[in-house]
Image (cartoon, rainbow, N blue to C red; front, side, top):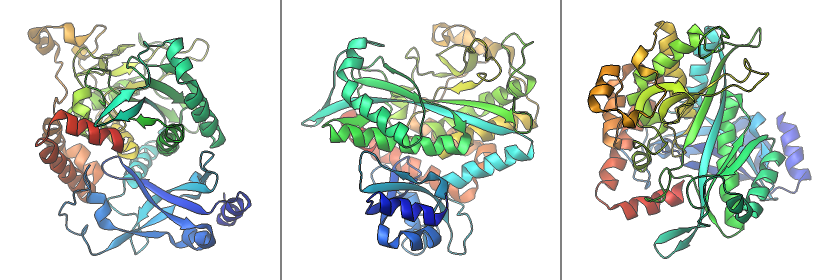
Length: 451
């Protein structure tokens, strides 16, 4: 879409404010809105934001990073292809942005640019990626200092689906009006927990879609008097909210799925095994990119279907990487890998870029996963000696462990670049220090609202 078409569409639709939005280093969606009268100018020159916004922690605690303080700003430059009218807010529209320096270059601390750089590296290897996020979320109401789920129904319960019907129907309508295609819906294990999946897209668009999805769900729920939370573990006694990430590699020229080999026992290609091996090697540090909050590590635990071990396997939902069953009649097209440790407190651009960076490292080095890492049972049922014999390691069990793992992973930090890696790690350390001083109720309350 061209700029003049966006301006005309906004005016014709009665829009008065257009939100220029981005996702920060803490996975929080932020932005500034321009009035439609200045939209044409802002589409060309962007909106200025202090660089300090990229060093805000979960509680907006500002961190000291050179070049990211009270002096200086970046420009939110809109990607015109992401413009969308907001069906749940008829006088509003949304457009997603890249962070650009004042000399009109991509800012090194821009998460969306991190993903673009990883995709460019893949393209230089004749690889493109398709991806889809599969987020879970709770519907609840606040009661004093606590939250009460919408219902007490069971997993895949049709009663639970009926109770949430009005909200979910409104969400479906709103997503489809914004061009997002729906795949499946069901209630999840937790009380009041929902899962509504959307169709895969090219990797950058998939990350953009996740931002639009989160905004839509939270706004629609709020309008109907409910809170929707994507927090990783909003209820200590209920299932966590994952954001399972599906990814596949393609040859753009031939439209061939590069992860598919019909002659392999799991129908996976050699390139897919290289990619898997890269993920296995970098999972400790990668966990911080896909689960960056204090609350993330209440979700990642053995025997909870959220994965806690570095392994992979066919349809194994306790493995960090699941190889999903294929759709009959479209085996090649449906071949993908499901990364399970991720949650929606992560920035989708950073999370997906990290997964790709780890996988590409495995491809470049022609790595092959050790036989013991392939598992067709719950690794939590193995003894410590059995896990050690197979080479299966535990994922980081705390935010601090994940911080140390990423600090030690130079492949991932080099891929991020010094400024993004430094700012990201500094914020995570600040969050650890802050939430370590408070009890779980404080942590859950603040994560519930932010995500």
